[in-house]
Image (cartoon, rainbow, N blue to C red; front, side, top):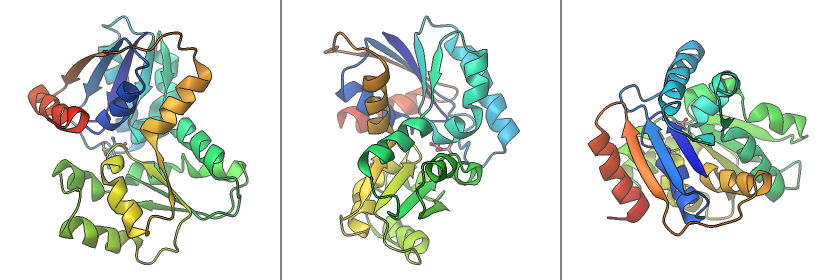
Amino acid sequence: MKIGVFDSGVGGLTVVKSLLEHKLFEEIIYYGDTARVPYGIKDKNTIIRYSLEALEFFKNFDIDLLIIACNTVSAYSLEEMKEAAPFDVIGVVEPGVLALKNTIKNKDANILIIGTKATINSKAYEKPLLSNQYTNISAKATSLFVPIVEEALYEGEVLQSTMKFYFNKLEHPDAIILGCTHFPLISQAIADYFHGNCTLIHSGEAIVEYLEHHYSFKKRFKNTELKLFASENPEALRSTAKKWLYNL
Ligand code: DGL
C-alpha cells in the first residue's frame, strides 16, 4: 500500500516514525506545508483552504490512503478533504479518542487535552469524549511547545518553565492527549513533570492502532520507501527527518 502523510510542517514526522516502526506501508509520500506553518494560530477558513491545496499535491501520486498527521487539520478540514479526495482520508482525532477509550475505562478519570490554539478552540477531542460519557475533561492550548520542539529544546530550563507556566494550576491528570504533532518529542519531559503516573496518548501510536483495526495488512515491509516533500526548504525537512526518524 502506498500512502500520503500530510502535516502543516515537520511535526508529522512523529506520526511517520510510528508508521515506519510498524512496517505497515510499502511507500510513504510526506508533504509538509513548511512555507505556511504554523496552522495552529490560523482561522478555520484558512486551515481548510490550505488543506485543500495540499490535497491537490497528493493527487499527483497514486496513493491509496492519505493520513492527516496534523491535529489542527484533522480538527478542521477532515470532512472537506474526504469529500474532495479520490482516495481514503483519515485524521488523527478519531484514532486518538479511540486510543483513550481503549486505555482509560474510568469515565471520571481526569483527562487533559493539549494542542494548538486552533485544535483546542475546535473542541474536536472534547466533543466525542463528552459524548462517550467522560465527565472530567480539561483542555489547554500549549502553543509554545511547538517552537520549543522546533528549537530541539526537548529538555532543560525553557521547557521546564513553559511546562510550569501551562500546568501548575492544573489538577494532576490521569491521562493527557498529546493533541499536536510536536508533543511526542517532549512526551518524556511531560511524563516526568507529572511524576510518570499519567497515561499519554500519542497520535502516531493511536493511528497505528486504528489502522491495524480498520485495514488488513497481509504483509509487513522491511524497508518503507519514504519520499519527503515540503512547500519550502525541503532540505531542512530532510535533515529533521534524519534526526527524528533515524537519530542521525
Ligand atoms: N501540526 C500542528 C498540529 O498537530 C502543529 C503545528 C502547527 O501549528 O501547524 O496541530
